[in-house]
Image 1 (cartoon, one colour):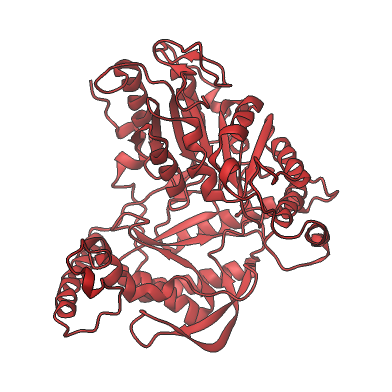
Image 2 (tube, helix red, strand yellow):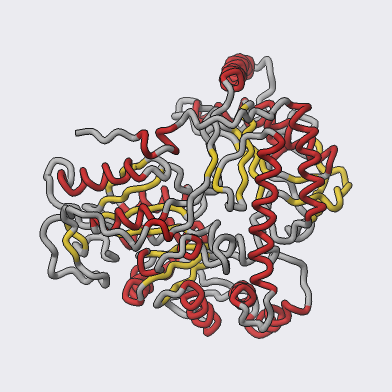
Length: 547
């Protein structure tokens, strides 16, 4: 699989000269699906994707329409010098060039995003615990620039950070080993992994990650985003096929595009959509030539960060086995946060780690650090050590960061001699179920799996997105993340809550009480407990296979 130009997995002939470390199998048509055991054994998937009322959709599109009209009017006024333009503009001597700043691609940022920009990039001046401190700022020019008032908003309830297990915390004696490593190794490495940047701490961490995931080997990288974007091109290339979930993270999308492989998108978590693409890939092969695909790689995430949904892993594994494709799973949000002991979606569904070919995850969420990893079979990881762009060109992970991950992982695994890690995983699950249940009872539309600590609350209208975040911070001292287009579909702007094990019941109740009041004030309690109007996304039985 690992050689982007090789033929490890074929739906035609097998390239016997390939140096790919994974087993070579024919990607032919299999008459019977190879099920991974009894389907009743797997954990049932309980997810919610409720449709919005018609009036909410009408007013949402109407709001964007009015905003667009006024945007064109203001662009006209700026072009004629009637209104001052605060955005970056082309120099006069480049007026005949193709526009670099004042083009249509910048229209949305210039005229819509800028009006509510104060809800993003808020400066934090404390650790991202259950409570944090926010530096107050104001704008005198409608959010084009900001100035700090010198006031700090203390003890804001943090409902936005990915600090799932609360391990991104202030220094205490449990972090003594991190301090010792800082004193011994310093902060920087000053080299890449392939040159002089592989330390004993990196090897210790990689062995621990492999043990944690119950796989043969692992490799760590200094940046989570680059773990996907810089390593997928090492696994597949021209003549290969990538089947990607339509809601995959930007790092997966970038990595797929950089690889040069053909990319086809399947509906989110829709098994029939995926099977149709797999079947067509086997039958028809590559476009024009009809040659067999060199490899077929399925890209999915464990928890989807904007939807809060969990991958339908048992069904996808069954398809992977049936059609002899490879499976690459991004567990950035799921590792450490789901499963009885925090080992991600494989443990969540009680499956065999060998069912997944490539494990990817990050250390930025549950482990309170930074960086990412790839894990799986030893020959795959050895191949990546030689061919990974990150290993060849990116600076190695900082030693104190590596030690923080080691400390956190040992805590979760119980290797520190305590049960604190397991207690945090269990508390996160309790907080998640409690918060989701209460939000549903209050009448909000929330997306995702009932056990996902990422909780999207649908707001729809852009004006309500801004008002929601501003009111929660200014009135109730609650910090939330609000998300809109282009990170979400145009009409599905939302607030995204991230639950932490360090949230107390009192904190969650205070947030729920504030949301109850805000929901009534802004009229965002849209729930009527109806099924999604987007079955093509979420209801696989609605997907009709074409003959």
